[in-house]
Structure formats: C-alpha cells, structure tokens
Amino acid sequence: MKQLAILSGKGGTGKTTLTASLAVLARNTILADCDVDAPDLHMLLHPDVIRTQEFKGSKLAVVDKEKCDNCGFCIEKCRFDAITETIEVDPIACEGCGVCAAICPVDSITMTERVSGYAYISKTKYGFMAHALLSPGEANSGKLVAFVRQNAKLLSEKENGDLVIIDSPPGIGCPVIASVTGVDLGLVITEPTMSGIHDLQRALQLIKHFNVKPLVSINMYDINKVNTNKILEFCKENGIEVAGRIPFNPKVTEAMVKGQTIIEYAPESDVTKEIEKIWKSCKDYLGLGNAFLSRNDIYSIS
Amino acid sequence: MILAVASGKGGTGKTSVAVNMALSVGKVQLLDCDVEEPNAHLLLNPNMQNPEPVFVLVPHINEELCSHCGECAKFCQFNALFVSPDKTLVFSELCHSCGGCALSCPRSAIIEERRRIGALKFGSVGDLELVYGELNVGEPLSVPLIKAVKSKIQENTNVIIDAPVGTSCPVIETVRESDFCILVTEPTPFGLHDLKITVEVLRKMSIPFGVIVNRAGIGDNKVYQYCREEHIPIMMEIPYQRKIAELYSKGIPFSLELPEWKERFQALFNEAKRLVEK
Image 1 (tube, rainbow over the protein chains, first blue to last red):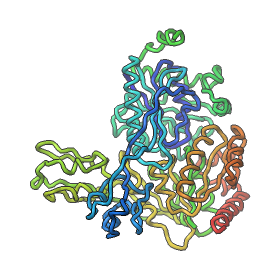
Image 2 (image 1 turned 90 degrees about the horizontal axis):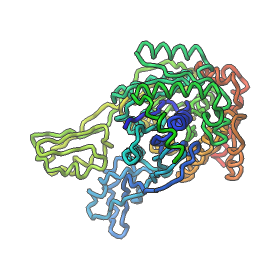
Image 3 (image 1 turned 60 degrees about the vertical axis):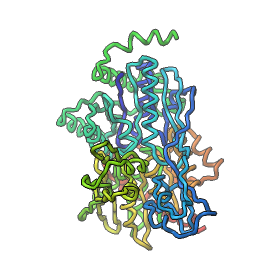
Image 4 (image 1 turned 30 degrees about the vertical axis):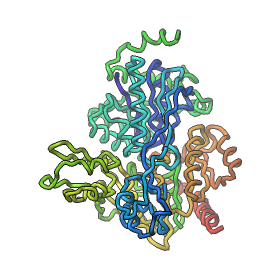
C-alpha cells in the first residue's frame, strides 16, 4: 500500500479540489480526509457513512464541589489557566493533563473521558473514505488525524488497495505532521503569491524533516507569472519536480457549487488536463504504473 | 479593543483583511498568531527589531536517580514518556509542559528544562506595531508560541489579531479574550461549511462576531442566506477583482493602491467597536 498526502502550508490553495480530482482519476482508492477541524472533501465526493465511531481524544477535569475545600492548590498548579477562582474548570482551556486531580489534597477532582469528535468510515463512488469531525472547540486534532489514518490503513488492507490519498489540513503543526508522517509522497500545492511561496518553502522543509518525497503543483499559475517563475526556479535549485501548473478557471468554483469535482464537471477543461498530468506524475513516483487502469473496469461493474 | 480576524477555511483573506485594517486605523498593534505560516509581515515589509526565542518546559531525566518505575509514563496523557527496564525516553515534541511527570516521580529524578520551539519577531511600519511568532519547522505544538505572541498585547491600545486557520486549539487560544471577531469567508460551499463550524466555536466561547464576504461575486448566495437566517451581520463585502488578487499576489495591501478601501476599513473597525460597546 502506498500513501500520497496532498498538503499546502497555506490554506485555500486547492488541496481538497485536487484530492477529490485525483480520487476520480484513480478510482478504487482509499481516501482519508485528515482536515478534521474543517473537512470539506465530503462536499465533492458525497460519502455514504457506513460506520460512526466516537473519538475520545482527551480527558476533562471535573470538580466534586461537595469534597472541595477551596484551597486553590489546583489553580496554582494548573499550567493552562483552566481552573477559575471559584474552582470551576474551563473545558476549553483544560488539556486533560491530570495534574489537578493528582495534587488535590482532598481528592475532589476526577478526570473523565470526553467525546471530542467522531470518526467515519464511508463509501463513495470512487472508493472508501475515512474521515472525521472534531467537535467545535475541541483539542487533540493530531490524535484524531492518526485515528483517520489508521481507519484508512485498515480499509486499504481489507480492500487490498494500492493507494491511500490523504487530504491534509493547512499549516505545518500537529495535525499536518500527523497527516504526513510515513507517507510515500507529499504533493504540495501552492499558488503564485508571496504568501504561497513563503508557505510552500516551510511545507517543503516539513516534509523533508520527515523524509517524505516532495512533488509540487502550482494552482492558478497564470495570476502572477513572475511569481510562478520564482517557484519554478526555487524547485529547480532544490531538485524538486513541478508536476503541474493549473490555470485559473472559474469553472473550478462552478463545479464546487454543483458539488462536483472539476474532472466530472468539465472533463475537457484545461484544468482537468493538467490534473491528469499531475496524477500521472504521482503514479510514476509511487511506482504504481498501470495498477489503476486495469482496476477501473472492475470497479465500474461492481 | 482586541479584534480577532479568523475563518475556518484557509485562504479566504484573513491576513489581507487584518493587514489592510491595521494600516487604516492609526496607532495599532497587529499580532500575527498564525505561527505555523505567518504571512502578515510579507505584506507589510516592516522594520524589524531583534527577535526573542520562545521556550517550553520539557522533562529531563536524571538517570542516576531514575529507577524506571514507569510512574511518569503512566501519568503522562500525551505519550511523551516511554520507560523501558533500563532507560526512560522523552519525546519532547509531544510534551504539553503540564509538569505532571515531575510531580509523579517518587524519586525526584525528573527536572524540567527549557526547549526552544520558535521565536517572537517584532517589526514596525509607521504607527503600526507588528508582533508575530515563527514556529520551528517540525514542532507540532503551536499553542505555547501563540500564548507568547499574545503576552505582548499592550493595555489601552487597539489590537488586531490575525488568527490561524481551522477551528481547533490554535484558533481557540488566539481568539480567547478577544472583544470581537471578524470572520472572513467566501461565497462558496467550502466557505459556508467552514464558516458554520467557526460560528459554533465563537458562540460556545461567547465572543461577538460579524462576517466579511471576500471574493463576492464568485460561487453562490448561500452564505448570505445563512447569515440572514442566523442574524449574523455582514460587515463588508470585498468583490472578486483581478486587481485585488494581483496586488495580493505581489504582497501589496490593496488599500494602499485603492485608497477608497482605507475609509471602508476604518468604518469597519468603528462598526466593530460600536457592536462591542452595545
């Protein structure tokens, strides 16, 4: 099983659009939406949920007011300012570390498990999908990402799949690290803006740090060709292949409004052609050759 | 007033709004709390001052005292410690600096030491004072650095905060204690979906908010419909204009080239103030 992660550093550069398009081109692949705090892939792929799992990612301190003698030792020891002067726990600030429960002289604090989101296993037209939704305001998105990837891996083993395609969240922190560790290829999608270039460089540093092979795509490359050339030059200097340059095309947003991928909505468009090129590069890098061609037909029958 | 600019979805124009507003309202502190991918400085080209390193506390094991009893690993909720019969390993990237391991160690074999996770950077452009954090690449936890950026908030100054993307811990830490939040969205299904999640978070935190629709004209009308139904004020619309997109791509705040926007951003800031005082 190979794993391909789509990431970007900067948000809104087209990760989900690209992931969904690759899913359509690949067919019979396993998809993992690892953007668990703002997942969007389901709006293009319309999964039918087969299974829902509770995610208990962290604990929460609960104070037994009967036992508490208001000594305030917990306030002093909590490093997250999660206990108020009236000895109430702020659930948003509490990280569930358990220090307050351990040091309370009258044992008035217990740690309880809290459901901080849900993980889903679903079926789409183009293969199975693992995804999740972190409850608003909850922490530990990295753990939930790990959960989604584990689900994707199990699905892949069960389905004898060749490839898992991962839609990563933006940024380079905890949930992104959880999305890209151990993948075979990191496809970084950027845009020719000053922020896009800056964030691309940090995203590339990140995957290098985790020994992931990089590949770059430039979205809306024609909105600033000077910057596009800067990206091309930077990649060339660093020995990184640019797999595709996707032009600006209002059809991409039209497709999104219709809840479709650009591949389905405008199969003959310049954007579709470029994404096909990117997909071919990904397959070559992953050594998947024609694995998907032969399977296409089988899948369309089933 | 502390005003945060946030959005669930990335790339909707948070930084652009925060920077243009900061350049329009006179004396102001601009805090870029997107420490994973800070961008505000790219649009401002500020005069930079000396950076400050930011540290967190992580456990250090004194192997001479350690009996490998495993109490610390049992205590740690973040899997940052692993105890084998002859060695205790610390995975400091996973550590949340709660101090519980040191408390739980029966032989006082754990002391806490500082570890550098990033830097605070300071710059200025005229009346505008910029503070931002830069997380070291490979560091997973951004919250301590966000707290460090926010510790530089000055009393009795107008503060604009550029929040990171998403709706989880970094965003919550950023908008906590803000007087008002501006949510930047775009009129597309992705924009609307992520806006709804962010609205839930802000309501849970009891922070008043309003919406800016960026790239107005693309997509559909559902964002407007949603805001109407939920009684959320739409405080500004920024049309999809090639000129604005081009200026952004070059790293130029558009209110500098299109001065009519300066007044609009001033009015926006005053409107937020009015809503806070109401």
